[in-house]
Length: 360
Image (cartoon, rainbow, N blue to C red; front, side):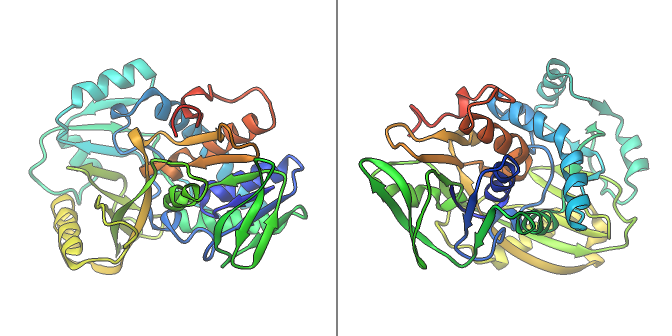
């Protein structure tokens, strides 16, 4: 089968299918994992999980529980550690803190209110001026560029996987109403099934079949600081902006939400805004070196609910796309569910909310 798109969703879909003995051809328009999978922060939780529908929550919980073993499996297979790093996450001065705590009790998640003095004890570099906090201890972040490298290495080691990078897909090959392959910059590539996992570009590709998929690019910008490895002990989030510590002392701060089409040029306005947020969260970052500033394009979708399953009326065409801000969070569950549905097995969670039928 042919998978279009080599982000984390496409890579992990390919890995899961190949692990089941399927022959897989994976195509990407550039190098794999260089779009939103590379650009994101890698928090293994929606930023505000209580604000999402049960459909997103179900995928998020399954993925959060599975990520540590995925990281270990990939590290063992490839020698590249995706660094699933459990730091916990503090949310500061939330308007809907009561909703968050009620959600946690309902869902059985270990989220609790903490005294702000205790937060300053745990995170000494945190800025002054915050009055309330809630904390979840088991939230991890994954170092997404390393996750991409590890998945790519794992795929290249499998005999039933072919990877074509710098291979842009322009449309689909149809035979008697069935999709039997894709037209690409290197020529036609055929397969008995085609999986569209092209992130923000998925809607553009489905247009070639006259189908309207409400997935559109939503730009996000990030900055990266270099600090000491023990500088920040936990992730912190306030007013929609967050700081994420990596194991080696890099601190990621993000992110913006911009609807600028497919333009992913970093801007000075966003840089200044992100620096201001960073310094409000952690004043010492005013003295730290900014070692990176970039933008990526999220695959925006209604309510952030991805499309997982076969396209109705178009035999042979499948979707695993539209994860919006949570592609890295939801990838393990989405890709396991996809394989379960495609291979006709008992699904890990109810597939109905993600089915493309009725949503295109």
